Image 1 (cartoon, rainbow, N blue to C red):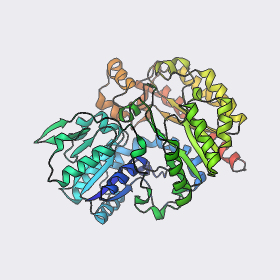
Image 2: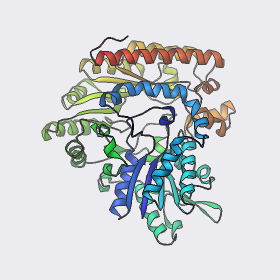
Image 3: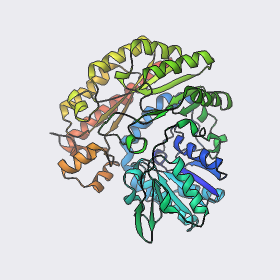
Image 4: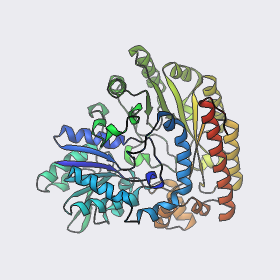
Length: 477
């Protein structure tokens, strides 16, 4: 069968180009290709007419991220514009690949865009099967299936479920009730099958099918940054994060030889110069990171790499080894400069460790990208100022700043519903308006909150430009 796996429009609606590779869809594509299906991956959020340089992806991407947060309120209006040329472009691409089945990866922020995409697919062919998966459908399958353009929801990890679902579709739509992890409509009634067990041995999965990306030949710079993961799952309980809904809290690791196999494929076949390890906490198990870094050195695989981690999962000795093994940058989720807020959101992180890790990263010449979040529930002006001041004191090489967006199924989302009296459907709207977060904070009017928020955003944009200029050996003007 012909299958088109799609990533919905998001920041492209705001004229922003990002270096995002749909890794999850590439795994699904590889599984389906192995089953004999004709599969393509269509990332609608990537503009084939815009080039993407490697330095852009590492540096100015942060400014695009910031501007997207400031302008995200425009997205609903843009989505409702049926005359938008993008819809014709997408429909034409769908017609080109003639899919029998479409799979769409959905987050809460792309929910409305995904629903619009589903309607475009049904416009192409009413009998086309539309499957949705990812964080948001996993958490709220009922809400997703209320849209008549969506036929199935895959909850949790999708590789095994989509394989079974495709077999049932090919078998005259029989046996849906036997597929673990599937939600669907049966004679107008929404049904949820039992959850699917997580994949214990990640090595059984085929490597992501990067070659199935639509128009990948038009993105010569896209593969200069290879995106991959070495594990699935996160043991922490951060109140804002929905990661565990899909991947679970028990962490499963790929074997070192399996990881090296993919790295060689990326560097040799695709010419990747850098690899971005997309794991929530790359350094979760210190012993594995040491073994992996030693393998990089032993295998003589020459590449630079980036990872995400926590301040309390790094130390002097480990950072030195990571640097020797090619680590160029580490993304740290700092979130807040207020210890009270960190405790409230269950970050389980101490600010003293953040300062210490930042110092050690500078010592070893590893680029520090720090993530911060504003507008968190119970946050006061004093808390926001502490975050503002921490940005200045840490002096990271790059700052990523976002406003808090309540994801369904998370502890903070439920806290807001219970304590602020805001309905879940209203919280969905807050994803498109940063100023709405003033309803979550304490002791600030909308005007006061928005004014301080804008001041901090302006600082971060200027700061990142200065850091980028230093990287390029120029003077910021």
